[in-house]
Structures are given as C-alpha cells and as structure tokens.
Image (cartoon, rainbow, N blue to C red; front, side):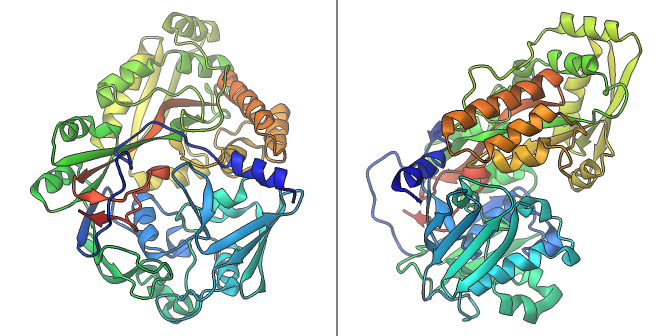
Length: 513
C-alpha cells in the first residue's frame, strides 16, 4: 500500500470533528493514582457473551471499555490509533487487512492474548450454528485468520476503506475475550467476563452494582489510575441526577431528554457537563409494504408535517438538534443538498387529500413517559393534516425483534455514532439486507451504496452519500428527528475522560483530582 494511500485512509477516518464541552480544554495536569469512581448507568447490564445478549447497549459498552480491550481505539480527532494492535495495513482493494498485535499481553486469567484468541472469538460469533443476533454487524467479514501468534488477517466480502476505525467501539464483535474462560465457564461466562482490559471484574449483583478493580498486570504500565470503578444501574433520570448531587455517584450518563438536569448541572460549580455532537441520528423507519404507507404521497405528507423545532422544544427544552439526514454535524459527510422535504403542513394536508382515502396506522414507542410524550406530539402534528396515528407502547427490548420481523407500520430506530457511515447505511438501505427495515428496493440506491464502500476518495464518497440521502428523503422511507448528541455529568474532580464517541463513557483512563 503506498504512503499516499495510507495517508488518504487515515484522513478518511478523521471524523466526528464536533462541538464539545468539558474535554481537555485546559493545561495538562498530573494524573493521580488511586480512588474509586462510581458511575450511574441508564440501564442494567445483561451480560457480555455476544451469543447470549446479541448486541451490547450503551451501558454494556461502558462496562466493556473497562474489562476488555479492542485492537484499535480512537484519538480525540476520531482517528484510529494502536491498542492491542500496534499497526495495520491493507491490500490495494481494501478487502484484506493485516494487523500486527502487541506482544506479552495476558488475559485476566493469565492465558496469553494472541492472534489465535482474536480469530477464535470472532469465529464463535460468526458460526451460523450459534445463531448470534450480532451476525449482521459482521456480515462483511468473511473470516479472521491467525497467520502467526502476533499477526491476524481479516478478509472482507466487500472493500472497507476505513476498516480499522470500525474496530474501535467496545462492542460485542470488537472486544477480545479469553477463549479459555469461555470454554471453562460455559453458560456462566456471560456474567463472568475475562478480557485483557485495565480492570478485572470483582463482584456483580444484578440490578444493584458491578465492581471492577485495577488490573495489576495491565500491559500499559502505570495505567489505569483508579483502584476501582463501581457501575450502578439507575434507570430513573431524576434518581440518577440526585445520586450525583448526594455524592452516591461521581459520574452519570445523560441525554437531551434530561434537559432540566443538564441545565442545572451547567450552573453548578461542583459539576461538569460533558457533551459530544456525534454523527448519526434518531430516526423512524416506515414499512413501505403496508397500506397506506406504501404510497409515497402519504409518507411524504408525514415527513412534511413534522415541526422538529417544536418537537425539540417540547421534549428537550430545545436542546435536541433537528436532523434532516442520517449523518449529522459530527460526520465527515457534509451535504449541500440532502434532499430534505420542506416542513409544510399545508402541502402535507393536500397530499393526504390527493391520496383520497382515510389514512391511519400504528407507530411503536417505548413504554415510558418519554415514549408516550413523543407519541402524543406526533399524533397532534399528524392529526392537523388529516392523519390518524395509534400509539402502540411496548417494552424497549421488544422493538428490535418486531423491527427485524417487519411487524410494524412505523418503528423508532437509530443511526448510531460511527467513524464511517458505510456499515450502517449499507445494512439499513441495501436491497435484501435483513436490517433494511423500510422494505424498500431501488437499483440506483443499491448502486450508490455499493460504490461508496469501494472508493477511497472522500469527496466522491461524500457525493455518493449525499445522493443516497436525497433518495431516502424524497421517497420518505425513513425520517430523521434529532441528531445524536451525547452527554455525561460528572463531579468536577473527575478528570481524563475522552470524547463520548457513540455515547460511550470510557472511564478506563480517568483519575480523580
């Protein structure tokens, strides 16, 4: 691979240059060793075995960043940097990626980390007999092979020009687990994880707390700084914020729907608000095979009736940023024309009148006060244009299987923060993908998705992705509500937290002043 091509590849991974508050703005400070950090999470952690839990949610990602390592991590500019892998290179067609691994690394159980462990961990998730719900995330990886103890080779079905950056998230498919521990513990491994990370699981009481303690044999000498981290599931946002004020926690996860708490924290000198404007967006997928949503006029009317600023004000006191495409301000994809339909309630009403038949459908929402509020607001907006929407509230865990089985009219979804749009855009919109929730097929859309993943030229890829956005918006097969913005609120004494890529609070290198 030429040096020019390497430089271009690194440039492609330079993403998420976003508005940020509370991170590394002052002079360098001396890190202090010791202490306990208590973190308040939104949800309880279901476990760490991908075969059991399928896909990690944000709470699991936060815990995984402490217990496990990934081959690659992201620096504060969103560029891939070495972690368990010291270096990497690709074939000229970006289909074969070779990683040179860090020597002398041990899992928490004392067994060696090596290329065989990486390959074994992946093969277990990939094996169709294991039926992992995570499989579609790794569908583009044909196999992972250990060439020798410290060389691992990924062979891809389709080119991926930014592949190293895609391995950075502490997800079920990127974290490396001890094969020995998995084989020895069997079904019990889900709650007894063994990685190479800076912290080792000490205790775990479901619904109450997880305690991890400093790994004395961590490969990055002098790290971590903390003696232990306590993770506490606190699903109620008010209780979570109260725990921070009372000193029961030092750091809590938050989002824009907790606008009042965030505003109060910004005025409190004992607290700091960390925020990150990422890529991606909160979205809703429309099942285009279900009447009356199979008519493009109806779908366009639903989108044109949206008043995102009004929704943001009502739901988040204006904190949420309206979205008109799947990329967001934090992405390197910037569109001069993303094809967004205008907000025009009168035109929306005329489209419904032109359709000529009653328009009614159901929409899924989470069985939470937030879900109900969101549903009622959309109900009102659509009622004004002559549309009846029935709110169907379900448990959050019910939404993914309902979505994959296409048992919905309209369902909430999310384009998560990622260093590159390819994996999610291809999965969500290419014909035949199990995650193409809209049930929509367009040869031109397929052609653009296929081209965007094989060209290394960022300008050309941007042109492709903006053309993709125009098709999606004009056909109104999905609609975007708010851009992804991530928050955490911490005591002022908490230092060393990096950017909240993907909403993950990575406290693995934090320290207490």
